[in-house]
Image (cartoon, rainbow, N blue to C red; front, top):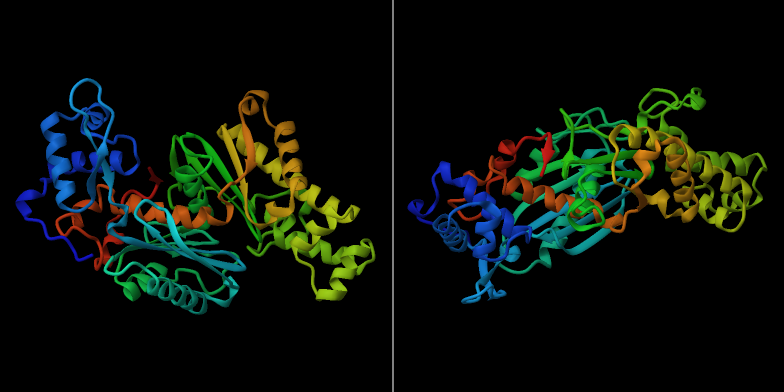
Length: 434
């Protein structure tokens, strides 16, 4: 699809851009589908809504659909967001794996690929693999549909305003690396970077169990442990973008264990996937678990999935390791539940695939250690999106920024943000994403 060129006179003034953005947002999220619904939902006048709809139609961002329901009189036409007007490249980098995908402007994943990855290999090697997967995905993309933006999640603290990782504990060589600048230059589109768990929370907020829920905590238990926070229906990143980093909360019973961040007794050093693997291998070597010893002899190492499998086969040591991890996560999470009072807690990440044991242990200790009022209507369950939550969130991160009031005026006259990598530098307030 070629860029749409619209006469400047047809584009609203700065004073009217707010109305344009509101109308587009209502249609994009399906909150209003007809002109009468838009008038009622936005409080804008009939003439203003009509003008904005005409402008968005001329820009190729919305189109008319089927007839809606009549409320007395002629049935109105529905208005559909043109999700096929552009494409998004998205990727989620974990400690040990990479997921990459192609999405439309509604955030729907069209194609996905997964590959093993070691984040400790550094940014040059890891991002070269991301670029290779993106190139492969683009070869299968619909013809003549431009890429509008890129969204990336990484397993460490990110300064959202710049897209730079800041002192990420498990990512040697990544500190202050210009991830955004590299990918923007390579593909000539705006790029946004965030912590992977924030994107998982955003993905659930838009397309999963958290849709329509105002206050949510998403906890990823993988090699590391982190949390994404949704407050008042918006993703809460904090002042610099590192809210929710619960993996480095101190656990007093583990003071002697040094975390990869350099401190001792961190939650992820005691209950993350790496900790479960470490403790499982120790149990195999000292003879406490014959099942784990057999796995170690066969494979040369123990991973957290081996501990989960052994627990399901009745190994008491593996059972205890998972129960302990669940207890420690649950105790930290109980503090968050008392402090934040969410109505939904979602668990995701590779370790949560271990079955019901870990979930049951987390749930038991959250309910035991939290105030009755804080848990009276609390749901605590696994993420239904899980492996796709991060990529889905990455797609929505990009569209939130592209259609935000800080960015929309910069490209709306062209009809497309493709070819404008500098847009990411002018994106909206990084404290929240609506």
